[in-house]
Structure formats: C-alpha cells, structure tokens
Image (cartoon, rainbow, N blue to C red; front, side, top):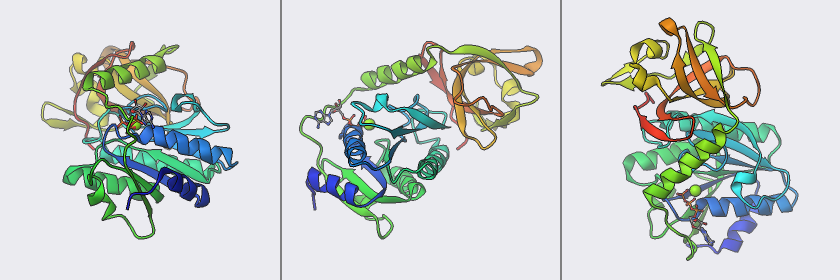
Length: 305
Ligand SMILES: Nc1ncnc2c1ncn2[C@@H]1O[C@H](COP(=O)(O)OP(=O)(O)OP(=O)(O)O)[C@@H](O)[C@H]1O
Ligand SMILES: [Mg+2]
C-alpha cells in the first residue's frame, strides 16, 4: 500500500526510533530525510541524521558516514552541524560494505547515547540485485531501524521490504513528481565540490608511521597488501593523494586526509587534512580512492572489505 506523505510524517513523529530512507538513486531520499528531521525537531524532540550515502554525501565529505544533530530546523542538509564521522574509504558501497555497515552501527549508537530519540539514516541508491538487497538488509539491521521509508517508482524496493525483520514499520511512497535525476557528471562534480569544501583550510601534517596503528588492507595488482605494508608495497603514484582516515583509539574518524608525500624509508607520510574533530589521532586507516587536495578524484584501488 502506498501511504500519503503526511501519514508517514505523523508515524515518524508518533513513534520514536531509527528511520531508514530506502530507494534507488534520485527518488528524493535526501530531500524527504531533511523534511522529516525538521518536523521532528519542531515538535521538540532530539533528532539526529546519519548520512550513510558515501557518494552524494551532505554531512561530512564523501567516503565517510557522517552524524549531525539538529538544534534548530535546517534549511538544507549541509547546514546541519557535523558531530562525528566514520571512514569508509570509497564513494561506492560495493567493495566497502563492511565499513559502511560498521559506520551506520557506530553512528546510530552515538546518536542514541547523545540523547537523540529519532535518528534518520540516509542511504545510497544501491538497492537492486542480490548483493544490493543483502547489503541494504545489513544496513537496516545495523541501524536497528524502527521505520523504513521506501520510495520507489515501481516495485524496485519490494525484494528488500519482503525480507525485513518483524516489527519494522514500513512506509511506501512514490517519488515526488518534481524529483530530478542527476547525471554521472553532475554526481562527480558534486562529490568534488564536497571534497574541495572539506579540504578548505586544511594543512599538511607529518604522521609518524612508527607510532600510529595502521588499519585496512589495500588491494593492488591483484593482491591484498596488509595495512603496515602499504607504504612500502605500493608505488608512489598509487600512494599519492590516497585518502586516509585519521582515527582515534576506538576507530572514530577525527579527520579525512589525502597523502601528499612519503618520507625516506616509509617511516612517515605527509597528509593534507583539516583540523581534526578532536586531536586524539592514533590510527591511520587506508582508503581506496585517490583525491587531490583540490578535491579532484584521481582513481581507486579496491579495498579489502
Ligand atoms: N519534493 C520535491 N520538490 C522539488 N524537487 C525535489 C523534491 N524532491 C526531490 N527534489 C529534487 O530532486 C533531486 C533528487 O532528490 P534527492 O537528492 O532528495 O534524491 P535522492 O534519492 O537522495 O538522490 P541520490 O540517490 O542522488 O542521493 C534533487 O535535485 C531535489 O532537489
Ligand atoms: Mg541523496
């Protein structure tokens, strides 16, 4: 059954819990998520957004899951203050599913610990095919979703809805008629703008690899390279501008950086990164995508998810 938008809003206001936005690309997930967050905020309830769309990210840069909380209604997603992040390392979910799911689990839990009664999770548009269905079901489980808002043109999300755990409240919607598709070129331009915006005001810091823990293997030339061997195992052209997550002891992302140099013998790397959320960096997490300090995407190697 297709619900009216107003009924969906009422259900989300009446029943606290995590709300997962599901749908293919360009159906209006993000627009609806922002409206829901504002409505919940206006009724005086603590509301958080977890932006788990690692490509078309509004909260935090692409390749990360971001957590934002609303103190007052926001006109657009990008105005919501960023409170915490989780590093995924790529802009597409296929090869990084494990890190994306872990990020959702972590940031939904953080939002709840910080008192959010409603947590709205925005997601990627990868909902079809066996792998896409399985991936989304893991995301729903990780978020412990109470509501699923499924926006579909036809029945493309039904294979996921059919397999949801009992007790999840499902709200089916059609895309708004004014919803506008974005081309691949527009999507890339959006991501590059978001990277550029994030790196504005960044500076180079030297990270001593003898004291930092390194995480996340990298795939190169058909094999996986263990985290501690990445600097010595990859040619410089593959290291240059590789995204790295600068994380705390518990794996929480403090800043996203891009490699701009390797010191003699691989004992240290230069990383261009903005000031961290908190200066407790103990871990370097290797990403799959290469992005220049100006925000340009320069290619990827597949991570070992
Ligand atoms: N109710 C609406 N009225 C007018 N424009 C809308 C409405 N809903 C969405 N749009 C427009 O349609 C486009 C796609 O919407 P939106 O970004 O919310 O979709 P999405 O499902 O999050 O897409 P993506 O898969 O890229 O994340 C945007 O340009 C948005 O401004
Ligand atoms: Mg979106």
